[in-house]
Length: 156
Image (cartoon, rainbow, N blue to C red; front, side):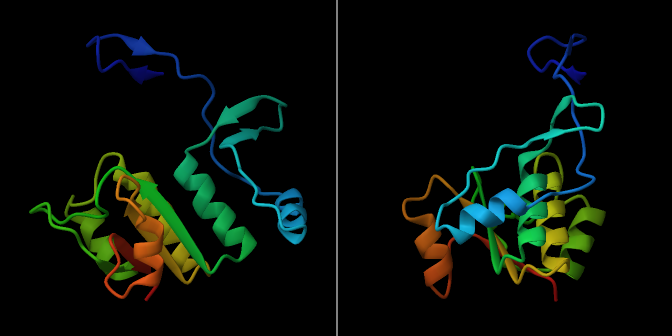
């Protein structure tokens, strides 16, 4: 259940929500080997056979880890990670992110995204990029330019 933002005091049934306990990447690896680009849903299945909704940012981070990705790009509708003054933070380390969690700079909807990004960076993904998907050519600008357009997260 989740609070209904449009009707205070009311609750919405958002169905079954779960966490990742295991990833079976064989199908994704087979698709990659055959030069396909897999599109992955954030629906998982429990031991009870029931389908569970999983936060898409968490799924993306875990898949990047399991597949040994060099980079993970997370698109959002903000410029990237912002400081308390609303200014873009272009580069973040694991230690800095821990401090931003502690002081409340990173909160709300960015918590699962940045937590997942940090876990991916700490578990072998070289860099995680949080970029504004509304910016034209954002992927090219972030990956192929020195200054980028979003926030780059590294494990060190």
